[in-house]
Amino acid sequence: MELLYHVTKDDSVIGSVERSKAHLDQVRHRSGMIFLTRFDGKILLQRRSPSNKIFPNCWDSSSSFHVTFGESYEQAARRELNEETGVSVPLNYLGKFLYHVPPENEIVAVFSCRGDDPVRIDRAESSEASFYTRDEVSAIAESGAAAPWLGKGWRIFIDSTAPH
Image (spheres, rainbow, N blue to C red):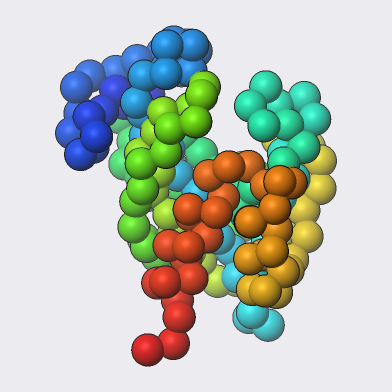
């Protein structure tokens, strides 16, 4: 049984909730996404597995995750990035957004990282992974082929990494 944080709209902790109940009853919980950028500037996206119950076959960030009760957002991000890609690099926190499209009801933290380590995808989670230019990711994030949360996370990434 996987326990997640049950949180308010402002991300205050109410308690814990089973992951299955969080999705079944649309209980707000913590999650996150990571954008891995190679030093050539291309960003990794993964296509969700066709066996995934939520938005199968949709493009998603480099790694997405739920925050297990007792973990911080950053601990969960490091764990999942390594599990889903085999990559272990420092993370940069970029911001959070509220996301509610059934069955998900989440506070989503967005992280970025850079690295050229070889990527090994978890075939249970993803059917494919590829590196794309910023323009290509923008087009994918706005398309019907993307998980619905990808666009919001991508906008936070763009706003946080744009040259000032």
